[in-house]
Every structure is written in C-alpha cells, then in structure tokens.
Image (cartoon, rainbow, N blue to C red; front, side, top):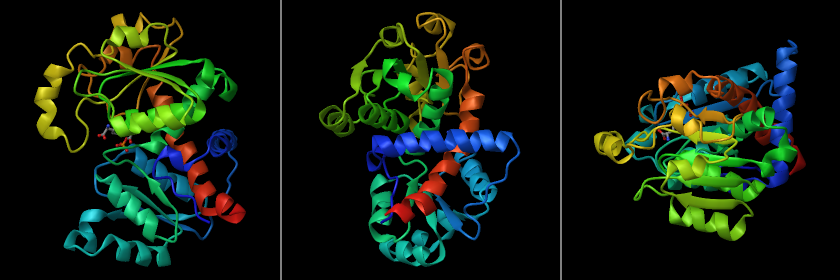
Length: 312
Ligand code: CP
Ligand code: NVA
C-alpha cells in the first residue's frame, strides 16, 4: 500500500503525530552532525509547474541528506505540455522513481496522478492546498508552544485570504482538534466544500470572521500569507484595495497574547499582508518556520518511500 499526501485528509492524526516526532528527531540528529541515509539508492522526482524557492530546495536537500537523489522536472518541459495523458505520465514515472512531489495549479490533476501512479504522490502546493507547509508549520508551533499535547489549548488566528494555505490549516484543525479563527474579507472566505467537510468530519473549533481584531484577540499564533497567490497576479491590484485593513502590523499583534508567535509561509510582501517591523520583530518565527520545511520534508519522504510502505 502506498500513502499519498494529496490533502491532509490522507493522513490520520496518528500519522501526523508520527511525522512530528520523526521530524523533531531528524532535526536533532542533524544538529548533532549525525548522517542518516535511509533513502540510499532511492529517487524522488519533483514535478513543478509553479515557481518555488523553499519547497523545491528543502525537498531536494532533504532527499540528498537522506542518501537519495532528487530530479527536478519542469512540467513545461515534459510531454504533459504537449497533451500526453496524465495517466500515462504517472504510470511511466512510476517505473523510474520512488516518489513524485508535485506543485501545480489543479488539485484534480494531482489526484489523477495519485490515482494512476504506483508510487506515492506528495502535494507541494496546488491552487487548493499546501499540506506539507502546514505539517512543517505545526512542527514550529509544537516547538514554540509546549509540544503536541498543548496544540488543542492554542488559539490560531489566520489573517488574510481564504486560500490554499488556509485550506490546509482548516484540515489540520479538523484532524487534530485545533481552534482556528480565520479573518477574511467578504468574498475571500475559504472554500465552502473544504470548510463543510472539516466541520462535518473533524473535531476542530473553526470559525470565519471579517474583523482581523476579533480573530487575533487572545491568539497564541497569528498566521498570514500573500493576498494574491500564484496564478492570481492579474487580481493583485484589486486585492490590495479589498485587503486594506488586513495587514499584520504592531497594533494587530498587540491584541493577541503577549507571547504570540507570528508566522508566514513566505514569500512575504512587506507593507501588504505584513509589515517589515512585524516580520523582522521579536514575535516573528518565520526563519525557523522556513527551516522546518527541510526537517519535515525529510520525515515525509522517509515515511512515504520506506516506513509506511513497509508497514502497508
Ligand atoms: N512556502 C513556500 O511554499 O515557499 P516556496 O513557494 O518558495 O516553495
Ligand atoms: N498562497 C501562496 C503560497 C505560496 C507558498 C500561493 O499559492 O502563491
């Protein structure tokens, strides 16, 4: 049996907790200079159709550090760009690779890969989700806020667009039982179907408001992301107007708990969704957050290629 990570619903609470523990251990071992090579001889393909700095480099470095090799595949340079069926591509790539990490626009395309590949498919961002981002973000929250056991006592505030990153936070909240309040402008709420499933099948405390101050009141974590995601560049100007008032600045941060942490998946647009002062200020954990993508991606690759396949 293979385990795909197309959305966080592909993982159980237990599997997520296993990833948090493994990522923490891999991080500690790396800091002590220990070299682990459980993926020696294994190959990861990274099929990307959108730009990436952190996700691409951390997945590639993760694979190398675990003893394996990684191949970056620009989707535009493949026969997919000349209409070769996804099912055919998935079957062929399964003959060469041990895992395929995909960043693309359409979640349906990613699901089609998962349905037709014999190897695990890992979502490295689509228009709808960014599951591995939230796994590593949770590792940061766990480090900063008293461990896994304390997660359900925290209030997490999302400020901004109800986008792909927000959707994966909603699913994490549902699966792990987190309190998540999202402040989004009217018209930019999270997807109804994603929210509906999270409320119906999960056990998080989820709500959507339109006032960022309401969301951050008493929050332990403030999270924000760009106002215009990749693929929405033409809406950028209109969104700047609509999202005025949703900037995470010192005044907003002051309404949260004194020891609140401020998170951003990056890349950040200083002066739009977050001020320079907050991003570089004492409450920001964004650089540690970015580092944890490496450690979590190691845990993810080891789990889907080796650990969970052996168990399956
Ligand atoms: N946070 C994140 O996914 O960054 P990249 O787009 O640089 O991969
Ligand atoms: N929501 C952003 C996240 C980038 C990591 C985007 O999709 O562009």
